[in-house]
Image (spheres, one colour):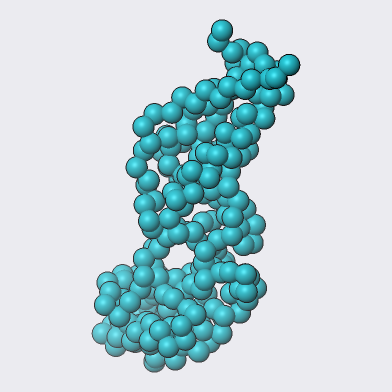
Length: 233
């Protein structure tokens, strides 16, 4: 007997992509979003990240405030010029959404104190594209070489300030592929239960979420859930 399978998807109109076409930083933890479960579902799309990203800090303790700030900003300008010359390094800023750091906007970065009146620092991002020829180890070596090559200005010092992380560009473009994977898994589940059962799914209208899956990969998913129910006759 041929087994007929039914997948009943209770989906509202698709919500607009919260990430849009932006580049998103992916940490080991999912992003915080009110109203969403903190459970990563079983099915999602695992794919290579687009960029390796290194948070960095320029710190300066020159006593004169005007000179100190000038040294910091001049060093950022030098880093921007060097990145443009190298071609395989980009500068950016942002805690979740990555924005390009350029000669036109770098002075908008806010200098912060270091717990003493004569010291300030600024944080931004150094990134390089990942690919078949550039793994995380190669990316880290590129970024480290770049940091060493940036010319110091006065007492300003450029250092890595956190662990290397990843980013993915426009995660919502993968929504269709994610839903296809969920649908395939739901059909397989219904098939195992027999012809008298179907699967109801909900949550597929929610924005695409993300988490880090490995040194070089991200897991993109929609916080769905489904249940097996008797087929309506």
